[in-house]
Length: 433
Image (cartoon, rainbow, N blue to C red):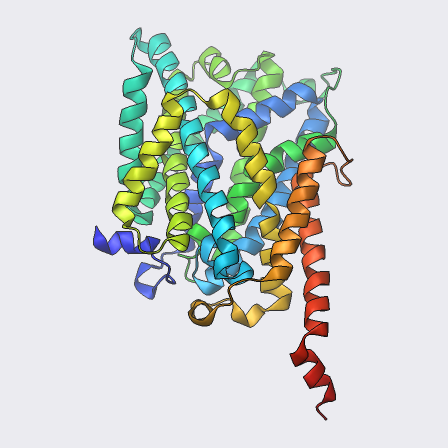
């Protein structure tokens, strides 16, 4: 176990831990098969007509693909997790607040997904087998399994994902086939309805649901042998699997007229499929949530024991679930998302344009304490996102996450240029013949 738990240390991934990119893509794809992805496609279909629904799903997936691919390549090139990238971008001390925000948010999602898991499984077991099962026992057992998988490391998550992806692919195909058997595609596209959201809001829903995963994609793409594997991973996860899953859920929603994905699957005689999706996707998704939460905490407190940290964070996550904080916790998670989504804008600009040669593990040996330009740009992007979320100011793109990333990136570019221009070293360079 000590060999695997070393994945959580603040070091670059070594050659012996690298794997072929399809294995990494399987993990990313597995996240796209999660219950929240199905729900996202279904909810968007409830607010838009069919044609606009598929435009929203496609454009949202393209945006996520671009962000995820760039972040994935940065992680693959340096073989570093997103939290080590944050340290380089913001400085050792400046990164502490960012990494803790990441960890708290992911830990929160661990608890929320346990809540979703226990509610769905208890309901499915009652419908399919007529058994009543305690959600308390389910939550404890699920959290133990997910924590053990996380402690074993990426290889365990990878094996589980590789086994489950084909199963979920079949279930998704059956869901699509059942929906199209109930109503032809031309008939579905001809459905008219009063739209309750705009296409921009639909795109925002797609981006908002996936954006955090795209920003922390380096946590798994650091294992690929070549940076091109990160691009293939993003394409398969975001432009193929995610789009197909959301599209299948939307088709089923249009044909059934229902808004609950479990009800739809049960109506289409896919009860066992729903059972497998809830168990497998929640298991892998929460293992990744806990995995990334450990990475963020270890990046800030490197002396903590990784195994005990995993157990402790897993316990905190299940405590949040058992307290049934789902309704009140979601706004808090949205708040945290607004806070750290602009981090992606700073890292992308810094790694691609400002300090491309600094994004390797050796930089951390003599890393600066603060990158004030990055921290200020992060604050500007996060503040802008919070104001938009509360309808205080309008959104230029109608997609809050994209507004925040773009503003953070542009602000960082301007601030870094001003600081570099006015620094003593820059002045000295201008005087030197």
